[in-house]
Length: 202
Length: 202
Image (tube, rainbow over all chains, first blue to last red; front, side):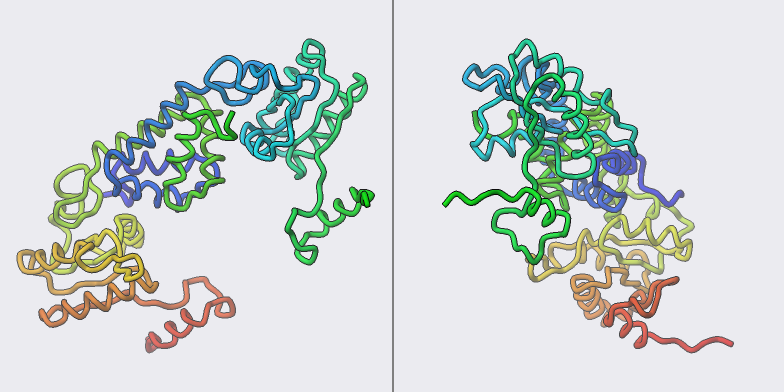
């Protein structure tokens, strides 16, 4: 007898292990959890996967997740179409919406440039972003990619191709988190916070 | 528009978030990963879950995962039925089998005692273990529960009820991992390693 699990268990562990952030040990743990819970509980997850895959697609304009051709933001006429906020993933839109500060449109790149992983501009929805600028009368592009290496590279690239088109290209501010503690900030963040200092309105 | 995802996406995130070790952020990340991959890739996971739930049950003797009434170890006549190795989970059996050092039977408790979580002996397959001792002619029980609080409590409990039955009850050794470094061992492990010291055959 081989020192592995019975085939359906091994298959489940293997499939779980393909998910991002799930190592072999977590995959095992989740697989045995699923075997222990009721059939209903486990099958609800299976159904949720099938259901999401069947019903959810990407908005054909901005590539946000959507159940129809256009997502809720693209089909909402009250949103300001002269501003596009460019994000890496749909989940970033949810984060920005929670602030209640933004009333423009979005564009999801579905990733960020990463020379190490071979992800260049052509793998992202950048061409599709460019195609929106004229028809939608876009005047400002706010680049909200993540403040890490990949996000910064992507922001630089976007600025370089968008600025010559006469658009205002801005980048979200980096700095100390509100409620954070100067003492515990890493030097990069603190450096950015200093660099981005603003006059105090008093 | 609420600041959440379209319902099938939210349902998927919710279901993923119920898995052990998956927090809200990981659930989001995995959900979007599943939305991005091909339908085939995502549905393979859904099928693996359904398939495992449909085909896999627990061995009616030892509670190892199995595709038939008895698992491979319980139905293998070449295994020594006078020794039972008691483990918390099926995955521990795979780990022990990999050593190639053990030829006896197994018994899976499906957990460990945890007063904090309200898991007592009656929630574990301890009664079923006791029922096996006579019919199978068991002489030794090796308690291979994890060397943590829950595993130790379970081991103590098992020793207390099994020893009066005239069985030899042993516990796997705790100590330094092979290839490990004394300097980096925590004091509990080092204490156990000292306590469990053995004469050197020379």
